[in-house]
Length: 285
Image 1: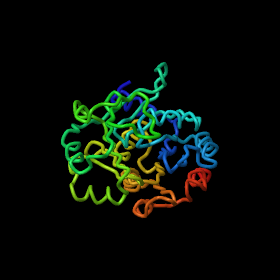
Image 2: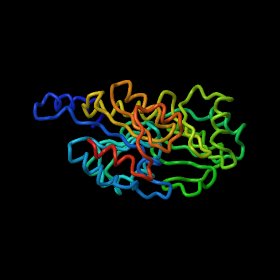
Image 3: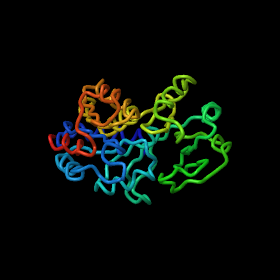
Image 4: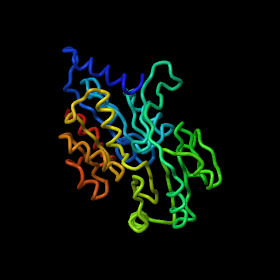
C-alpha cells in the first residue's frame, strides 16, 4: 500500500465511530533512552511499553540507527508497530505481512553526498565515514568498532559519493564532542540536516529532514491528532522531534543525562536511562 492509499484508509477509519481518535503516538529514541551503553534495556521499559500498548496507544521507535541496528531492539521490546523511523527521519519502514522481515522501506529521503563528503574530508582526513544507500545497504571506509555492519561493505572513500544516500555518518575518535560542534559551526553545513553526537560522531541527513518530519508523516498516516503525541529522547538528533511535538501541543520528554541544550528544548525531563526514566513516564499514562 502506498502513502496516498494509506491516507485514504486512515480517513475511512477515523470516520468510523468505533475507532478511537484519542490514542497517543508515542515515539521513543533508542540509544540513551531505552537502552544503556552496554545494549541492555532501561529498567522497567518492556513492562511499561506493554502497559501503554494495552491501553490502545501506538508505541514506536524513532532512531538515528539504520534498520539493521533497530530490528533487534523491537524484538527485545516485544514491539511490532505499524511504522518505524530510522536514520534520523530519512527512512520510514512500514510493517507488511508476508515481507521477509515484516517491514518494508516505505518512505526514503536522499541527497547527493559529494560536496559534504569532500568538505568534511578536508577537515577530518583521519575520520571514518559511512553512508546509507536508499535500499538499506551501507558503505564504509574503515571498521566502526562495535557497530552493526550487517548488509554493509568496506569501500574506498571516493565510492561513497557514487550514488545518492540517505545519511552520512562521520566518526573521529581523536576529536571530542565540542570539537565537532565547533567544526560544524566553522565550515557550515547549510544544504543538509545534521546532529552532533555525545561522542566524536556526526550524523548527516537530507536538508529539512529529521525525526520530527518523519513522525509528522506517520501521525497523518495513522490518523492521530497532532496534539496527541509524546516523544522521548536524550540527544541532539532528538531536537527536531521535540520541536515538532511541542509546536503541535504534544509532549517532549528529555532524559536526565542528556546535554543541557537537549533538556532545555524539551517540555519535561525524566530520570536517567539507568534509572528507568522512560518507564516512569509511560507508567503514568
